[in-house]
Length: 272
Ligand SMILES: Nc1ncnc2c1ncn2[C@@H]1O[C@H](COP(=O)(O)OP(=O)(O)OP(=O)(O)O)[C@@H](O)[C@H]1O
Ligand code: SF4
View: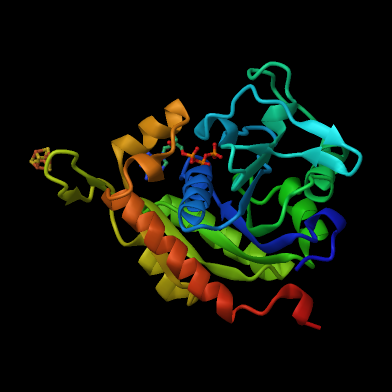
């Protein structure tokens, strides 16, 4: 459990990071959240990508407004049964095409509010989607969440350029003391919609190479699936619609691996 007021009802906090933009960090955060919900968990998803928030669009929540209560912001729910709660700066923008051009202190204040002032219900897991790289936003996030974050999942693609960016992310986690749960290799091959054969369209093995080099476990690989991008474009639930596809099964398996790894990571509050 967390020490922060509005995080008191939050179980485990998982931070999703990537060294490079466009590798599928938001996709991993969103699909992992949907997979957890499909297994009966109460989940919160916090989109901290202040300059490029994509989570509301991927979940069909674009245009929704957040409301204030005396205790803070009330998150937006994906369905009436309220098992996936979402918070994003996109909910605060009047026009979805508005750009957020803020300097450090304003960003810092907004991230602080996002972490401390959202009234999450009782959650089993809070997943935090972050901007790419290691920016001021990450520093602020970790300053505030030091006591609460259970660990980080690092997302990469199989090619070596992305891998070198993840190396920097690993160093960042080491320096800031954020425990790394493991790596996810996204866009790992392409599953043909006709024959379900998986073709390796990018050079392969980068995730495993990094895992071998750093000793950080490779938690799973998610293939490219045209239905996944279509669902995210249309704001539809991919896990519900294509639950038996290789990509959805890879996400479920990733979820199970993450949950099993979490058991062996001490809670930040238990570490003196
Ligand atoms: N495994 C996949 N199969 C098919 N499409 C994917 C897959 N992973 C990601 N995509 C698509 O690739 C695009 C980029 O993904 P996403 O927005 O998740 O990346 P990101 O790393 O969060 O980007 P940013 O740097 O902008 O935060 C999206 O259109 C998403 O739907
Ligand atoms: S993987 Fe098989 S079905 Fe798919 S395009 Fe190639 S040959 Fe055709």
